[in-house]
Image (tube, rainbow over all chains, first blue to last red; front, side, top):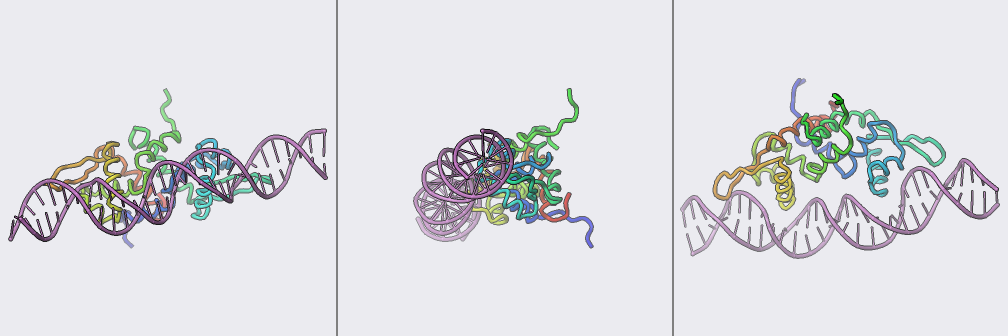
Length: 102
Length: 102
DNA sequence: CGCGCCACTTGCATTTTGCAAGTATCACCG
DNA sequence: CGGTGATACTTGCAAAATGCAAGTGGCGCG
């Protein structure tokens, strides 16, 4: 068992395959604050409704988030463990985008 | 003056504005290994040549990388300080994509 | 002077994204 | 029971991004 290996480019490619599409990472970031409903995500992010539906379907399939039925025609989207594991990456990226490098 | 604030979503959006386009982060990741020439990037990543040209132009404009003239019709692309600051984010993302969450 | 290497550009097909309007379901009010 | 509003989407079509393949231009070398 090798102890310390650095991650090859294909690992990054694998990550981008899941969260590299437009809006995907922003949706996950919003969900880090806790479960949100469809309409909340739409209004908060300004993402087109068809894109939001598509992304939520893809991210659910990828095991990043899950649907929680709330009431009759109301449900919430919440990150799975795999989704929550993106917090560090999102944090780093946000710090970089904000100016003070981290 | 608040000492510890968490980065708002718009910071992430700003980051994605720069490195959110297809291939952009993979190009930067490849450049973390040191300066590379156009043909090297193309062959290593399998990125279409017109996309590579477009991304390199955008990333240069954004201050992420710079062109170094080597010889007559040969030049290398190298990360700037701002580009190098992406290492942590890329690392996190690659670890996530690789399976062992970090 | 012609050949090949290198860094691109150009033209066009395909895919993704965005906008706007429509559909489906159910609670609530009367 | 029927109308209204809220919620979560779907659908049709236009615009933009992406990808493929072939072409362009500079220069060293023989």
